[in-house]
Amino acid sequence: MPVIEIAGMNLLRQDDRLDGRAVAVKGYWIKAIIPSCPAPPHFLSPLEQWCRFEVFSSQPYQGKTCTEFADHSECHGNVPPGGAVTVEPFTLTETQGSDTLWSEAPGTEGGVPAILIMHSNDPRAWQCRPESAAACHHAVVVDRVAWANGNLLDWNGPQPTWIATERRAEEVRTLDPVRDPIALFPILASEASMIDPRLQVTGADPVWIARTIRAPADVANDDPTVPIDVWLIDDANGKAITTLDLDVGDDYQPGRFRTQSLVRREPPNTSVTPAYSIGTADGEHVQFLGTTGWSSGGGAHEPVRHMAGLAALLDSGTYVVHGWRAEWEHQFMGDRLQECTASFEIAAGQDLVMEAFFDDDEGECQWREPTFDDTL
Image (cartoon, rainbow, N blue to C red; front, side, top):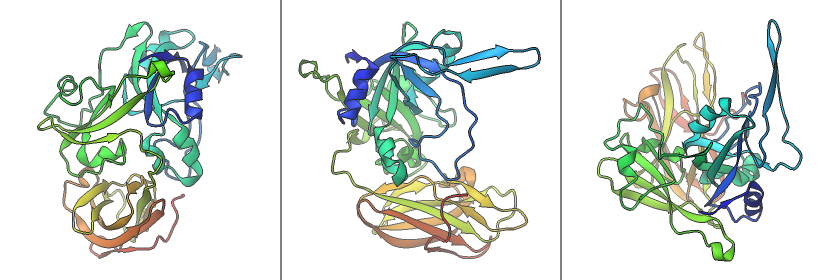
């Protein structure tokens, strides 16, 4: 992949030439001051901006200046120097080597020189609220830190300690058809949609999500970007379950389906929370939705509102939603308490929210129209 400047990457993004495609960009990772900012009164999807402090600059500079006094220290953030071109990329769960940027930053004056592989118009942009949609589609996601502070990074895909995989990353990256991915991450099958919401699989078995380069950059036609395939790999047998183009295409118009719930009487300090799943009309499970939104209330057996969290992206059609209560650590592996179901239809581009009402610990569950919004 040819390595380009941040200004060139911004032009590609402006012209939608970076949508679902990756590019290698050089610059300086700035250790900016971490601001103190109150939490927003509603759930945010992974690409919605809040309290951001990730800056990638075309020129080195000190992101913050601190002054030591006898009894305390004071710090303030610095703006980029004149002529510097910057971008605020997202390093997410699956970003390879992001820990290197932070570990190198304290001892590096003026920022960590780095080469990042990035893309925009990530599929998670469709999970953003309508008022944030444009910014989310325009956001840049880092797939991999390819080089930092003079060193070509060894392949060091993140390996969550809570997921027991049959295979190590070093083995998976050599499998056909993966072959040296730019990103590779293990996750439980039911949580794969948190990395790419189009990966609709369920179950507690571990899988691997890989992003690979499908073809080289067309340098002759002044195109430094590369097309990217997304693979879902079965950890048990090393076979591909499905593959997708990272570029969702201009005709992608999924419906956004969100779930929330109200528990009329919930004991204080309980670890039992609502959980949800979506299936097709013929009974095939499509996607699991844990409780990712805010909750409020509780205490002295007051009602608890569990607010809508991460949206499921669905093709238009008829589906069945399941709701139940379970121990938080076993939402989709343990016993389902007070389970109830309801059929619903969703259209392309529709934003649909349904609410599960749990009467009490022993009562029935039922689906209904939302009785509250998703703000605290």
